[in-house]
Length: 263
Image 1 (cartoon, rainbow, N blue to C red):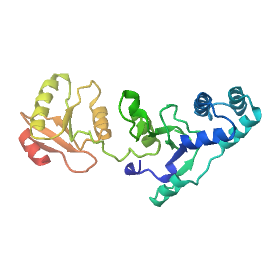
Image 2: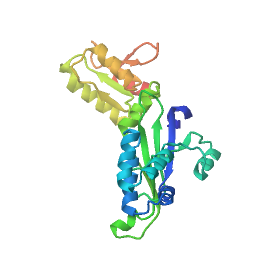
Image 3: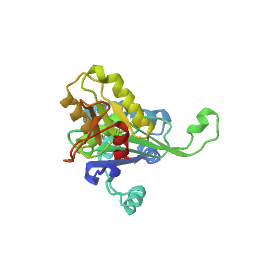
Image 4: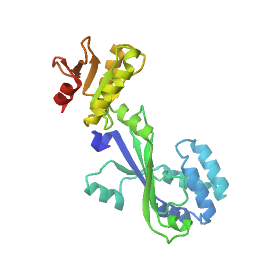
């Protein structure tokens, strides 16, 4: 996120620890492993249900309303101190909070678990989540090997970048250098032949064969991160090369001449 220009206030890293949570449950006389698993899954819904509903469901599990009230109070209280948060602070990572409602629904997590949240009210959601596991590999017949895993979504990440205006001036890694814009469908085959010449020369290029108007195609080319657009001229075997986001005059030439100019 920082590599894209995100600021600390744009996102929050929320951490919890499965071991600590088990100790907390046992302090409140909740020691049955199955009950602890059920409560962990309930905590994953902590912010999605009302206090009354949470305590009601927790009371059914613990058979003790007083314990349920205390656990709810503890889960809802965010903290900022801890060995992990202090270590991260030394590395310059200060937007970390302890959030005991973080559960990460998978049963194989055994230690630290975390989620990264967008703090914008327009996109307040989890972006990345994961945690530590010590016994996961043994489920597949191997020796227990400790590790950390995480998952993320491409759509959620794009939503984050768009929400905070971090895509506006960034050229996608997959952006073509040149986009060929035929005047009409009759030029599509010739446009593909031209594109092949540029590709052979090592230049990333694509052809817009959509049936949209030329102005629309040119606008899309700029949004796609292309540096140039190439259009057909009235002359034989010559094309027009326009440098986007620049006042430089269009260059007219053969494909060989334009390839040489770009390179």
